[in-house]
Amino acid sequence: MESKILVKLESISVQQAEHTVLKDVNLTIGSGELTYLIGKTGSGKSSLLKALYGDLTIASGAGEVCGHDLTQVNRKNMHLLRRDLGIVFQDFALLQDRTAEANLAFVLLATGWSKGAALESRIQTCLKSVGLETKGYKMPHALSGGEQQRLAIARALLNEPPLIIADEPTGNLDPETTDGILNILHELAQQERSVLMATHDHQAWNKYPGRVIECIDGRIARYQNSPL
Image 1 (cartoon, rainbow, N blue to C red):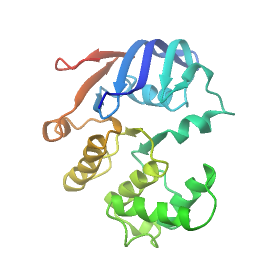
Image 2 (image 1 turned 135 degrees about the vertical axis):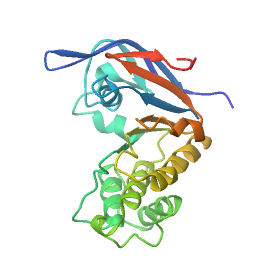
Image 3 (image 1 turned 90 degrees about the horizontal axis):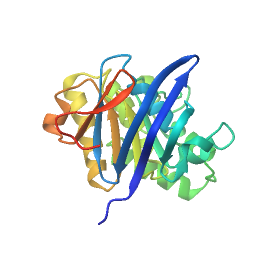
Image 4 (image 1 turned 90 degrees about the vertical axis):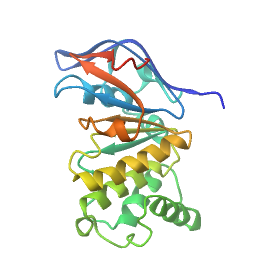
């Protein structure tokens, strides 16, 4: 199957306040790719991910994500971009006053689903895909760190996005739990989804090989002969 281009950045620059946090960034990501984004703290990794999901505005250049022109994304239409993305954060970003199932229902309702059997079925399908089919009634604080991150991945999968963006998804987890999360993300890439993961874990791509790119001083560089 021919790879579909999901991310295409051409000489983009991104500013935050008066600072240029990304400059002259070129990057292409196709479907079914597992891509690791590495770099020192402050190198621009998180800024790049935020630009991809619309939290930071492109100051110059051209960018497209899942068919959405990033130069045209604003607060009024950002939800359209977010429907085609799954976002996984290091700190899980779960609603602490709702059960696992209610966390997922909240997202589905916010993205246009109606209450009913189809919504409930989608919730159960996503919980099962990350091994939480018996934990839907639990509050986030009653789940382990690994289970909370699995729930965050289930949330990211709700609308079957072609691209998953994960910002240090194993940063708060122990090594054994980390391996389970990496395995889930690797399997997603095998299903023709693309996964772009920022990470400091240099062991990750040894066990789960993928493309590795590096952020250095706000620019993207090849790493270990990895193509851009």
